[in-house]
Amino acid sequence: MSTNNDYLSIEKKARRNYLIRNIITYTLLGIWALVVLFPFYWMLLTSVKSYGSYNAEYVPKFFTLSPTLQNYVDAFTQVPLARYFGNTLIFALITTAAMLVVIVLAAFAFARLDFKGRNPLFSLFLSLMMIPNELVIITNFVTITNLGLRNTFTGLILPSITSVFYIYLLKENFEQIPEELYKAAKVDGTSDFKYLMKVMIPICQPTIVTIAILKIIECWNSYVWPRLITDNEKYFLVSNGIQAIRENGFGRENIPAMMAAVVVISVPLIILFLIFHKKIMAGVSRGGTKG
Amino acid sequence: MKKIKPWLYLAPAILFLGFFMVYPLIDVFIYSFEEGYNSASQTFRGIGLYNYMYVLRDPYFIQALKNTFILVIITVPLSTGIALLIALGLNSIPKLKDLFQTIFFLPYVTNTLAVGLVFMILFKKTAYSEGLVNMLITGLGGSAIDFMDGPYWAKMFVLCFYTVWIVLPFKILILTSALASVDENLYKAAKIDGTSRFRIFTRITIPMISPMIFYLIITGFIGAFKAYSDAVALFGTDLNAAGMNTIVGYIYDMLYGNGGGYPSYASSAALILFAVVLTITCINLTISNSGKD
Image (cartoon, rainbow over all chains, first blue to last red):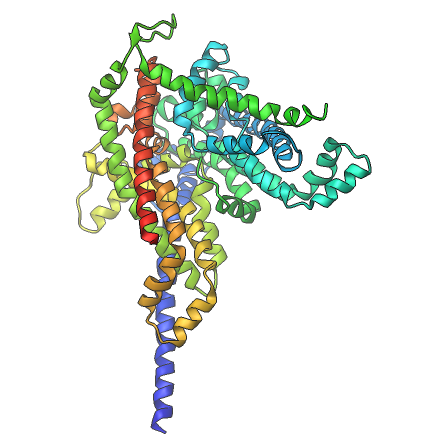
């Protein structure tokens, strides 16, 4: 009888411990979720406070009873936010599209075509992954300047068209397609290019989409190269744009309007993330790094 | 025809990599040894180590070096540790794991420059408002601090905080998937033996995920040494004036901007940075290899 009681009390204790542990874990995770989400809430909140009411708050308020969209109007009319936005969109789409062409062709050659020096060349490609951007950006800056390509889309786009890492990722994926398929297509007289377009790309579409999304995110957030290569506002991307807005945007320190611009810049990526978060997280955990 | 076809497929990649990676890599060494290089006339005085001497004696570079080292030493262990705690928490909860994981990943996809402005506003103290963080500090009985224009440690605190906020998503993601891939049977066996939770953690969990922890520490060091846009986001483009410049910031300032036009100094600084990162990475690799024996 008493052993039975002991058993029950042990089980009760274990359940209580489990419960307490869970409560603590959820609380701590909740606190960090709050730290992550709060800046987003704050920028949204500030962006709908009117200029007057924001500046009248000596103690910042956590909510507003009279939201206004005036700041968004200001952000689009008083500073060239729409232009920064459009520039970034053009830059991200063209760069991503051009990069996809280059890496698909290269990955196909490494995965399926037989030629002399394939493996040494691929090792050479891989070793290029270790080169930090800071080392090569100096010469690239001088090159683009000498070519007279500063303040052009060509100059912005050219250096970021290739990525060794994505060639590697795609090659691995291409190699998973059974070689028999390729041989069968060869017997049928299908050309390499047709095989690539009709078989390999459709099969590997999930990976290609993931790469495209990661590249768009990278382009949207790129700051250093655009800053070096553009000094004409007409070619600013959003990162440089927001910096310009901060330094001499609205003629006075208009924080609510600045926050409206920040919201406009952040929203496309957040939408992209909400739609594709599984793909993005899977892609990043396969070896992506920030920027 | 059959022989040149593979090269046609590879041609774009080889051309771009050759022109924008291999050639610049060689060129940066040449620049760094050309003394008195003039970018307008593209002439130089002589060959030597003057550029390195200049950079190493430049007080701005010393300041940038100091800032970067402090940032690295604080943020790399801190962010890896917090990420490990969060990943352990995520793996132990019965529900809502996906939701929390998605929320925690959000900073990864945001524009560093844009969200940095939000942090600036949260910490900033102005004539008409003390800002939210100071409100909390005074509410808890402290006195308000000017985080953005005030004492050095306060600015460094904001920079470290923002850096950790930015780099955590990647680390949490990697560690969560590493923890999830540990063989369940190991835990079950340990439970049957009545092993304590702490012992399970130090004897099973840590050894099983240690390769990933080392991977994160190594990439963390490399990433933190290249810190730049986080600092710009918080303190504006003139980082020297704020005393918050980083090594990468120094390189870009030398190349272009107010004090710019010196690709030689920029190259020397970039190679010094590269040497530092390479040394640290080698030390890390040696430690992680000796841990395996």
